[in-house]
Image (tube, rainbow, N blue to C red; front, top):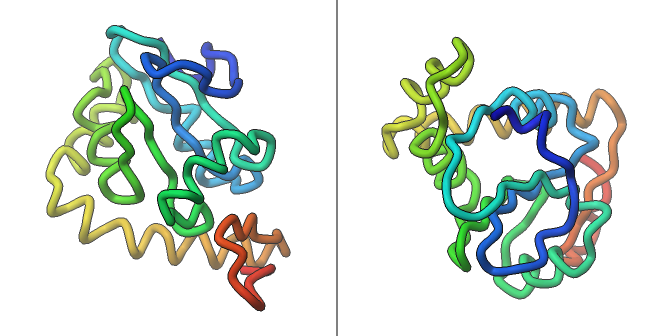
Length: 146
């Protein structure tokens, strides 16, 4: 099952999985839509951080900055940034070339932690070029643009 086949909506119950990210980022959007997740208990949803205030309240209450990392929620457990892509690699299905590469790279927690800051920097540079605004869910001053 690819995530492209899964409807995007708000995560509403504890047994559902949700990958929360900024859909205005073309790199994040491509990555998330190329993922293939193994069939497992619960449901997997792609969640647009800009359109789901209830989800963002929970994320903000935990002090997580959505502008600096995607968040995977599985059964009340939150994985942020490098931990999220590491966990996605662990639950990914090796059914596509992209997923096999993703699993090979990010199944190592250390590689995920080493590579994630560089990937985030490239993402932030891309969003700056595209003149996107930040979500700024933590309400940081002077933090509207990338």
